[in-house]
Image (cartoon, rainbow, N blue to C red):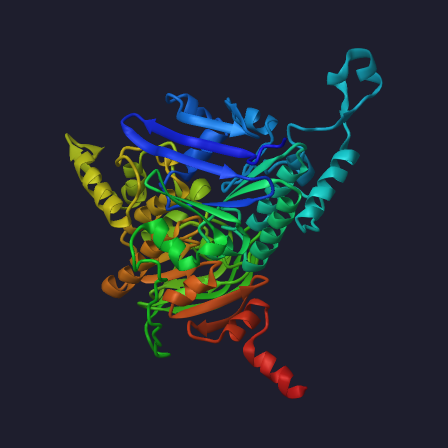
Length: 537
């Protein structure tokens, strides 16, 4: 008789030293069920999954308490490879792809198919050649199952992040014997249409009898896709419930544990006169950023404004701040408060009074092997010579000042950590993002770029980040340019929003413009063009 649950985790407890990060957490998932795992960053979700996958960090720190059962049988998962052999797969939030390889090679990595040749018949199987035709057929089937028409021989390097997410999913689907898939923030980098497609793919997978654990911060997706829900807070199980018995508001309140904080941040949009001082002027800006190329964009940002930039994935919105900040090659002209900006020079951009929170917190934003406090003050030390002191003519780090500032930022941004000396690479994704924000704010910029600032951040942290941006703008007068794939976020705090499509600026709309106007702009059509077409008809 088949077991009722494909996975049971009973009374899981985990400590790191004296810190208890999981306390008696239990989880049950049936075959073919989509089970959402919710909680703020630092709630224990990642640690629970590390236990499930037998991650080295668990075994190297004393193991865990409790037990794991697969198909009703108690088991010990010794490593991620062991988890794979037991039919457990994972679609990671941070991509695990090899950029120098093709999509096919990534999908079949460590599961390559070979065929014999004259040499292998003499010297053995190790001399067989790769059967690329069969491998590409498998890859094509997996890509088709997730709705991707891209050629399977395409190199992963330079793919838009949304494409890479679907390649990750295709790789897991291609594996044989998969009984349980963990999706870790799978829609965090996707547009609305891509996210809708992904949820449909998840339902198709579940219909084949494969169980899914769905980790997400997008609560509307939970209501749409999940059958059951488990909520963690501060390492403890808050509740387990069925989706049909709850709603978004209740889930948000259960996650953050504070009534009245589940509502979205809103800031009244303001109208700046045409002759208002200009903080940032970009003219004929072109940026060569793979997957986010900008062809010819011109716009003005008023001093004291929160200016949004939106659009679909891969259309160029992310390329704009990266080009202005010197991260990728750019052409055109940019002025900051009336003074020319030297493009293709990241150091000059910081010296001019601009700072940026990158969308790529792991690749660009952080020194993962360094402490939280060193990450927070790094740019200020390098560019502005702050947090240093001279002793006998030698310039040294001012440890006392660094520690005080880091503790202040940890408190203000609610960075969930053991202290300022904790390595940033050990933090959850949302808390890493907060460290990026703290580093940018430490520069005391006159103009702040924030690119996808709430990607992978839970609802409570998202609200805090957006409130922080509004506070910086309203109380300190900081001019902010915010790039986001979340139109609701942009409309909640921005004064105006530029929509980019195919590397070009389609329109700049007020935050209170109609849904139809935003929808048209994101499709590459200006509202006046649509009205003209309607009149002609």
